[in-house]
Image 1 (tube, rainbow, N blue to C red):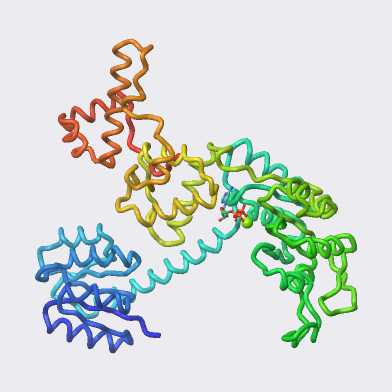
Image 2: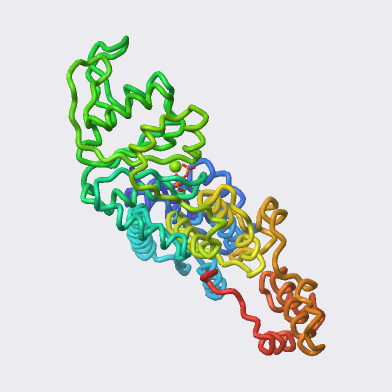
Length: 459
Ligand SMILES: Nc1ncnc2c1ncn2[C@@H]1O[C@H](COP(=O)(O)OP(=O)(O)OP(=O)(O)O)[C@@H](O)[C@H]1O
Ligand SMILES: [Mg+2]
């Protein structure tokens, strides 16, 4: 499919000439004679590249560029500027334009630049896809004592063939634990298959696990292998095992005892070599007491018990996880990572995260995409997090009655200035104005009170 180029210029002659030459080069060309037409046009069919005139009646090229970039951040935009407007062209580059070309246009140059831009664009795309693939290499992030302990247990359990039962609340990383065990085991090059016992209807789970023979039931036109058979040589992860019915539990138990099973409707025993890992967010011992889970199956599965600890018990990992997910999502989506003000960060550190790592990952992604500025302030933090977590420092909470007056005053000043800086997203002139002091005075205060702007890495 040819690539689409949109040309935007208020001079009809330029539109005609450029359209002609670029069509000859094999591109699909669209044109617009004003900035106003652009947005609805690109919303319908987004072009791959835009040639955009700077000097046009309102909205001019710069404004149009800004609008384009807000919803198509990866779009290649080449600005066309008249003589003497280099400064504007430089501004355009800062706003995300790919390059600029001066008028009067050399058609050769235009064609060359367009080709260059596409080459670079494809390289960037490729790079992004590769990064995505690499990122898929399930990494377990964390440096807290709890996670280090878990990693150590995984390291010991992985090389064996023993069954592992992983417990833990929702979103704590049970599946990640299972995948890590497989990846660190001698079975790593064989399949890792997952069966979510809670998601498969009762009447289908048996054939899902063990497969069926041709004619086993209406609709069984072919023999079909089940997950136990497909995972042969590898690992089968039985997720949400606590949701498996007692009938299915009995069949799974037999398969584990005998390392063999029969397909639904079959009479022949199928032998397999599969390592079974299981996970549940239910407390299985209480399920056993309640008569909903077989104790003999529990003992079969629970050879090595591992627990994925809730996030609130490893608060130290929160900053690491946030940085990790911000970076990961930014790379995946080809956008710039964002920083946090310390106050915004405090909220995230003190929230209880009932949905654990999954919830944190979603919040990080949402903040990165939805926060309007490159620095995430406490205003961007969702209400349910702000309401649940009073930040630890506020101007008043830092008042310590045991301190000598001078120290207490510094502590108060520091907290107050910090709060004001945070409110103003670390914009110095704005903060100075809010505090009604000179900018230089603010800088001096920040130095004396050791206040530093947040860095790229929120930890
Ligand atoms: N320590 C970690 N480092 C990096 N990513 C993590 C970590 N723990 C969990 N995740 C990520 O968080 C998300 C949720 O993890 P996972 O699906 O493994 O949790 P789970 O315990 O199986 O959840 P559920 O009970 O809801 O099935 C996944 O995207 C996973 O990759
Ligand atoms: Mg899971």
